[in-house]
Image (cartoon, rainbow over all chains, first blue to last red; front, side):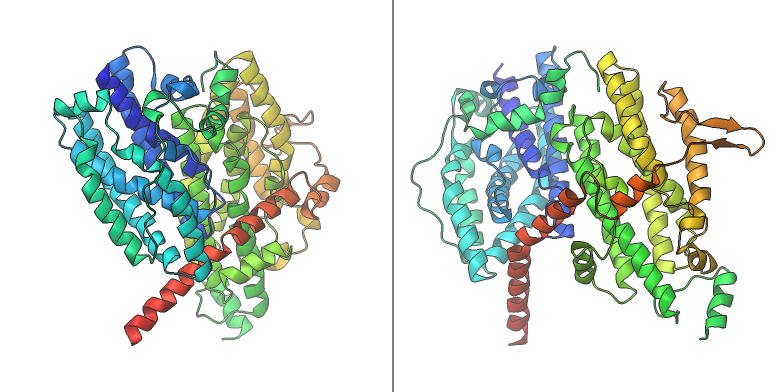
Length: 247
Length: 308
């Protein structure tokens, strides 16, 4: 069961990030950026689909879409940062950057998993996440070191989203068990590298790293912010309203 | 080059390229047509974008998002093709916002159920393809090459739309009802996409002579109807036109008259979503202003660093 829970968490974070990013479609600051954000969203939906296929296989009963569309708020395990509303473009970029930096390091480690499925899924995701990190990082620098207005805006985004970064490095029973058996990642082991990516980028962006203060927690137990319920009620409405229909 | 030489080149089926001499009216006609086409791709992202967050399966969601993203890409090719005629993307967008440039009226209709994603792909993209296949042979080189690229992706979109429609038409009674309702709402606006009858289309004359357009509105419309009727029959849906009938003598389907008052109303800004679509585009453009400004400021700083 731990392996299923572990994989489901990864899938959920990808799925919810993808769903949020897809909301940008037709709203990007430039046409090129609209296309880039949709691309990243598509990558993440693809990753979610891949991890959910494995979850479905481990479960032996429910399909990928059952997992995506028929679970309630308390049964989702994505990082809280992924469900936060898009806000303005700077908010989205900060969210994407902080998570992509984590994903990059996480998948780098997970691609060495003893579990062949997980290592293959991680290796595939890693290729895509490298680009997500590069893209969001380049926007961090442009917005941070762009105009006074953009610097102020993105600094505020960073300050308000910082409280969600503690979750990346939490280790509960499932994480400990999976990582000890060589199947998963010890999240604490990537914190130093994450700090390095964040610190060098922030200094290049002329942004100030917020102090670690109150950190959000709970997603590993299915405790979320109020935003997730709304996201799910929109995303899941058709399969829930017409349970007998095939699409 | 003179007007006569230009026309000789057109008649010899040679492409006109950006640096070639062209009559001012030809240039103007192209800017109007290509920008209208580009704006249609971009505004067209909205009615389908409306369902991305609610797509009923992961597969459907990825296909729809990829499709809308393709449209953004088409818009990009077309803006670039238009820029070769000496006008900037910024100016084109300004014309759109000021109401000086149009986009296809079909996107001023709302998408009200998931079946509309089927109807839009099947009918709207289907109609667009008929027009675009013909435009692959248009006389202006960059436009023609853009169309070749676009046609490849559009035919994929049309098949996807038809697949959604077919699944729903063969699904639960509720799904079938949604599919028929979508067809009922999108049929007439789709066949009006080809524009007014040839006799009422003021610009057709020169466009045909210059081979910007290769077939008239009525010819294209007929060809779309002829190929679509059978597709509807296969999946058991009824086209909402009591006058639709095979005409043995003409070798084509006869069909009923379109509601031209509605057509001109929507063209002139009075359709169900005209204001909404334009407001959405303006808002995204305004919201992105600080981002574009920051990107420019950053790039200017980098250039200065290199210089000093």
